[in-house]
Length: 392
Image 1 (tube, rainbow, N blue to C red):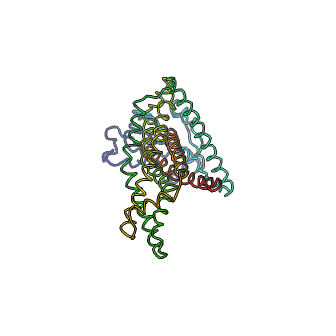
Image 2 (image 1 turned 180 degrees about the vertical axis):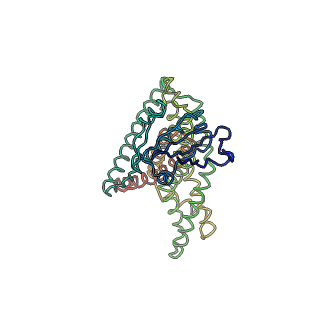
Image 3 (image 1 turned 45 degrees about the vertical axis):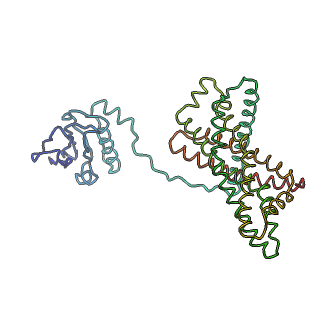
């Protein structure tokens, strides 16, 4: 008979091989080609690092069968079952018989539930989607999202119609708060940006038109560009970054705090309570911000033209008035309303479909700003084609 002792974890055994504090350990006893594992101590998975039977010990014993003596175990849980499962798998690999007859019946039942060997890890095969299929998937997702936003617009319009007859959930305090945030609070940034844009247009135009002694036409250039395109587009881009991102962050925060779920439980329409004030505030304030941006943009062009060119104030304003008609203002007015509705609806939609974590709030705000800016430019391109078709 050969008696060997497995090295227990550091600090768990004394010099005599006795377990300290009942720590788990095992001894191997070889007798007539049978290797007996004498298990002692507490075999609990959370107590300490449990010992393991190495393949070298198993092969060096030269046994044809392995059995276990569990009479010295004081306590055990799945940590012991995992050890015995490793022993059984090692026996299968070494073609050694593992005898479970001496094990208590609960241990045998747990071991029978485990597979004979671990399932092989099959690496996931990365399939490459064809390029045209990717385009189709993206196009389908975009069309589905457009349909969702259109449905949201329909529900919001219906909620606005009901609010006219005091049958909706629109609160005047929410509407007034959103109107102030989207209107008077944005005057400074809208004015600064449009003033600088008008000044840049006048500077670029003056540099080129002076070569042909046509500096007076800087007023026409600034006026037409501001009224027709720049005031509406720049104001919409500002509102997409300032107000649209705020709407998306606010609604996504409510989504994370389960406030929107609470509104649905109480039967309160989200379209009337949240989306309608946001969209209506932008639809109402955007035309006035557009007109304000037109005036400030032409003022910026006037400052640069007067300082760089030899023209009078009266001549500049006269050339500005005759450069475009009222139809240009009307066209920009319609564009600003469409831009406002688009920014409000897309921002609210992005906030409603956001996740519930803190990181999702930032992601929703970023998406609202990006989609708002890109969408405004795309809509402006569509309006440019329409204007060219109708001769405006």
